[in-house]
Length: 284
Ligand SMILES: [Zn+2]
Image (cartoon, rainbow, N blue to C red; front, side, top):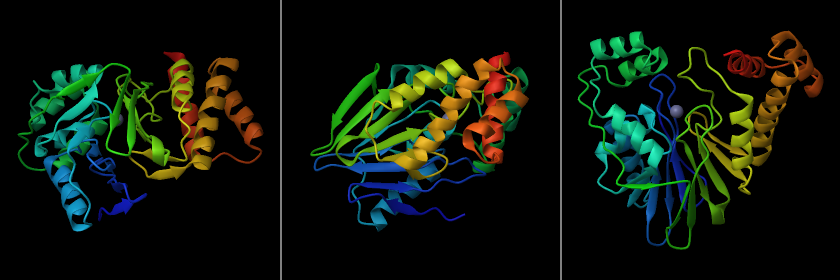
């Protein structure tokens, strides 16, 4: 699948994601003095492709990079960069654990058997790296707790730890003057639990933190940039399900019925799946 560079504005461009290898969106934000790259990519090849695409489009090369959370697909590309890398303290701590692992098939299989790794990621790692896997985990140079503001020169980025079920260490990046919020995987369920799940408590706390930013555009790592209207629809689904799962004590049939009544039309598959994730999070 061909990856394209999409410009949201003169200052902001991103490289589209890839499904089978689980490549997330990589984004660059350019001020007068600095260009911030958001996420390191799932491999050196991924990070290098992004730098090439920026070059071809006449866009500045990154002078700083930030990683949104510790998951492999957001950090394995960092070794291709020669700029300072920024993350939350919690992300760095999780990445320190990755740094000691081997990534060959036997090591991956073993970690999947032990429940440390999940088949979803192990399979995508095999897709991205069919040959030898000698990746180097580069740890962030600069870490922060809770929030960090970066002045790129006429453009302000606020890095804010929002956590959530997907990755408690996770941050979002708000580009203030452009009203763009890079959500990364924040509104994705916890994939490392025995079954994919959302908890009501974490979801509501996450949505409150996200909604403190007055954004117009939201960037979702394994999808695309969406409008505020589209975000509101996603957030409404999550809030409604967080309420319904408690109200109906995790009873899926009742939850689906109420959700359909709330919506006023038949549910889409994605909505029913999301209900499932909340039931999984309620039960365990
Ligand atoms: Zn993730």
